Length: 241
Ligand code: GRF
Image (cartoon, rainbow, N blue to C red):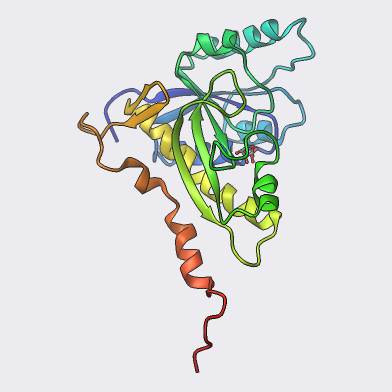
C-alpha cells in the first residue's frame, strides 16, 4: 500500500448496506487505502446504519422531509460530510437523486454503484429489468455521478453472465457479489489518485502514472466466467458416455 494519507470517504445509503460492508471490510483489512469517515442514511431504519456502528464508524440520519427544500437537505449532507473532512463520496444504494448543488461541493468526487451494465437499464430494479428483457450478459457499473439518473462517466464494469436456470433473484445475488468486488477496487484507484475523467472517458493510470494497458480487463468478473465454464452446457450438446 502507498505512503500517501488514507482517503477519507463518506458513504450515503438508504437500505441494507452490503456494499458499505464490503468497503468497511476491505478498509479494515487494509486492502484499500480508504477510511470510512462518515455514513449518512436518509432513512432511519436502514440496516446500513447498524453496519456502520458495528464497525465503529460515525453514522447519521439526515432525512429529506425534515428539510424545507432539496437544497437545504443537500446542504445538510454537505455540512455533515465536510465536518468529517470527507474527500470522496460514494452512493451505495442511496435512493435519491443529487442536484448540482451537492455535486459542486465534491467535484468529480462522487461515485455511484448501479446493478446493470450501463447505459442499459438505468433507474430502479435494474436486475429485474435486465432479466425480463432476456439479456445474456448482465453486470454492474461504478460511475461518476452527474445530475441525471445513472448517466455519469463510467469508471469500471463487471460482467455477470445470465445462466440458463437463473431467475431474477439469483441473478441479483450474483450481480451483488460482483458489486462487492468492483466498488472497493475502484475506491483504491481513487485513493491512489489513478482516475482521470476527460468528458465521458475515464482513464485509469498505471501505478507509475503512465496509461495502464488494459485496466478494465482486470475488473471483468473472472469468478462469474469460471462459474459459466463449470456449470453451463451448450444446448444440443451430446452427453458424454
Ligand atoms: C445495490 O444493488 C446497488 O447497486 C444499488 O442499490 C443496491 C444497494 O444494496 N444502487 P446494498 O444496500 O449495498 O446491499
